[in-house]
Image (cartoon, rainbow, N blue to C red; front, side, top):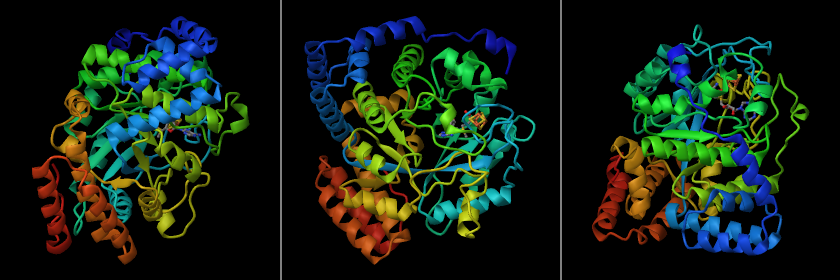
Length: 473
Ligand code: SAM
Ligand code: SF4
């Protein structure tokens, strides 16, 4: 933490304003909510007051409409593509005492960070699952896990080449840091810098963060400003649902997004919606604000309506059933085959057991990557391994312009189909190839631009017959 940078931090989350919106929204009448839903249906931007009302409605008719509109937005903007990724935990050393996390400093277990050889072993296993996009995860500890170590991990990952595949995009989810360190991450070629505010409610934030640099609310809140100042224009926000009032936190996410839009012309590239899970070293019953499935679903759908062009990420913290449901309501990116343990993929591979003491938290959806990907196709989705935007420089506001122009279907759809075809050839069995061929055949006609459609057909042929890889628009 740098004192001069800390002095510059602002608190742009107006707590009283959010409380007032929520108090008013709680008593919004049916006519007000119906009009807000009509607006959302026409694709108009909702006011804060309207979103606060939608978030809290308990009227089944309104909730059904929220789901319908969120589903339509999802289909219109993202089609039925679902982008795949996996986390890679590189270090569990942590100086912070976040009361919800198993890596918290007070939790006594043998900690470690991966050597570069171990990073390579983990990445090899992730590549064998077909992943092209990773999120590097670590606890905060400048001595055991300095920024140069993270940079070395990123470089090691990008340098690895396999017969047909490689990791093409490395996102990073590490603690809030200095502008200078963000510059280093930018130079290392990261995709999105992800950081969860955990909760936007300062009092709750102070209560659950017991000590360490992360306890400083303002330092954490201004992390994306420093990242943007350092040139990182793809940032991904989130809150950990289950810590504070979920409606307050949903509104906090929207105000944070607006702050970034105003100041940097680019809001969140993605919003993650993690929900508190059991973990060793904490007792989930100590957290008084659990978010039930219905509330969680409604919040996710309202976020889809409030920020239609922001990608939404759901991890394996959620069960298979919840993931299935939320995919229809706005989620555009999911993880698969995940381990939340340092060295967890090697442990899984050796059947040495994982998911215990050393995991950050216990995952819910423990299925293998291939079974998740296969089920996505059965449910009518297109699993996508696309990493094209960031590699073509379509980041920040350039990505948003593409999304808003409606051209996303002529870019993301061909890329999804080509990467799915690659995946099927390199990692699928005969049955998987048959299934994916049917998806590709059905979806290819939805590419509106004739030239791009023909090029995609041509590339898919090359992937199937000639072994060529890594085509993208
Ligand atoms: N250490 C960095 C930080 O705290 O910002 C990097 C992120 S940490 C590896 C990833 C995220 O896991 C945290 O931001 C937190 O929201 C989430 N997490 C921690 N404990 C959790 C739990 N018990 N259940 C679900 N998510 C949890
Ligand atoms: Fe450390 Fe992050 Fe866990 Fe907090 S959430 S204890 S900072 S790893």
